[in-house]
Length: 155
Image 1 (cartoon, rainbow, N blue to C red):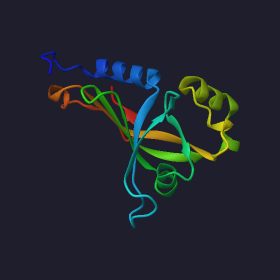
Image 2: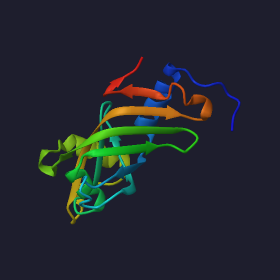
Image 3: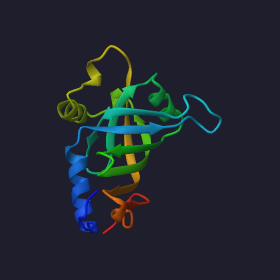
Image 4: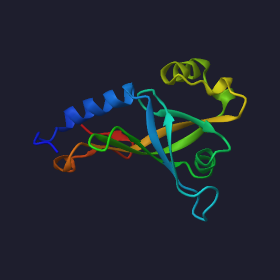
């Protein structure tokens, strides 16, 4: 715990954007569709590329996460430790390898050290557009934790 005063909106936005630009991995939470198919609730760590407006992720198409995102694109992402967390609620859109700009694929590989384009198994890319972003460190930052609502940054 810390006695530090809560950060204001401008500082939280700056810290959050730095995390989005510099972190390599995040947690991805997905769920199956309303009827319970295909894979149920699932949580995995994945690498990502942030382009300033969306996250690019990749996972095996046949994995629980891949199947969940193809069935229902709603997704929650989490970055950082529990005492400096960024939560992102978004919508994932599949991006087929044939439709992926080679420069984007190269940027993903360079940042993450992982190039799904070179693997024998079928990987699916997903572009996650954030709808809501929250960030806080301690309980004193719960108020004001919303940084994005309905896909629009606050401030």
